[in-house]
Image: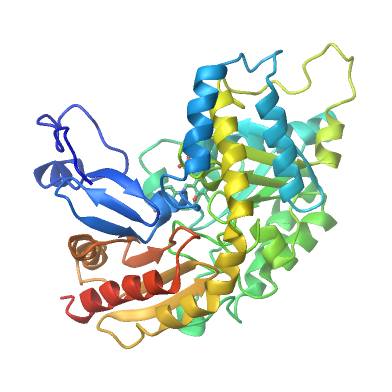
Length: 442
Ligand code: PXG
């Protein structure tokens, strides 16, 4: 591909980059200038295989014609419509399409613009749901250690990533955390769901005993924790959480911002694991990452609880200027169509065992202490360099990038989550590059 625009801007100082070591990056910037299918192109003219679907979001791959055309058409037809007390067709169509794709109990969709906003929205719906039903004492929220629920105040309060919390004051009050489920001593090198750890869900009983179940509004977990290093739920764990929540009238929220839209080979992790929460948060793959959009899926039981007052009254005092934005809605519809027409969830499911074997073939390489996988997700955990945690994995990231592969690292864990359109040759290419980097990693 030929580029006729300057590839790297001269001035990088103004843009304060998110979750980035700004000074290091700006000394030696890594820039993508275009993308197609499974590959990015860099400013120095190289192809880089996308091993992470952007940031876990481009599940259909890049530059997909249905999506790009839908966006262009929508922009020229109806660019924006007010989101409050007005409507436009595409938001309703997308909500219906999402309902049709989601597991049965999820009949209603509330639109947001990101995963973080989906989380805030779900927490607020949970609190308000109890209140409109006359159970206003249910105000406590339960998250989990190592959980990631975005970066807004609700999300970091229920989240369990220390650096995402400790700089930002006292956060929400009335939050407790379940223990995380990472048990490397017992579960290392597990393929799929680990055997050990279901008992960790019992901690919810302890929290209920401590506070009284009637004071707890909701439990929020990622069914598979992505950002903190790809932690699969131990066998029986989610089922236990579900059971305890039901027994105590507590809502269960699955944060499916990463696991939604085919990542595990099913539409949603709820379906994959056969455990139904009460609310599901989504974003990322909803629009293939092309336009910011998120959505909260709610059961009729929750939605209908709000539909009781006078008809002219607003039922839920919540929403965003861009909730159901026309261009995002058009992108979402085209994305879901692409998933369907290309059979991408089916491709993810059918490639999962090839992916698993390729990933686990890295066992035995220097510094590798654990490998885990599910669907088209994989993680390789490395021993940290003494006194310099994160450095070893980050070095792997830099070397992979130089060799033409994009990976993500969190701590000393390498996370892999390619677009679901990946084929076997590209799986081989990925693990060929990663293996060659790990082999000589210091
Ligand atoms: N919930 C979950 C489970 C997520 O993974 C969010 C909420 C927040 O979404 P937004 O759209 O507000 O960023 C996320 C986001 C990584 C990585 O490398 C993961 C996320 C974002 C960026 C990087 O693991 N997850």
